[in-house]
Image (cartoon, rainbow, N blue to C red; front, side):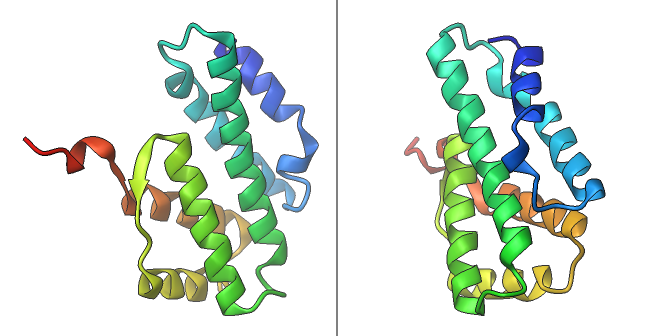
Length: 140
């Protein structure tokens, strides 16, 4: 699967952004389109490429759900949603993740005050900062 086919697949999947306003939906689709080339770089196996794109779409779908439901969920339920998102993000990028409850509590308080676009940017940045490359944990 080439990058453009993957981007077309993502853009054509409505339930990735259907709970977001236009600005947030566009932001998330742009983020995905930027990630796809590096995600698929060097992947020759069609099944592996499809799996990576499916994992990307799962992360997007989870962000869509968090944005839609954050105002009606309890803080504990939101923490669990964030924990799931972080594991999905780590899986997508083959990273290690060990969330700390205190950090998640702060993240929940933050996203409750943000617009959907701000929340998406915050959570993706948060995930990038709190997930570590497996290489960082190897014994040398």
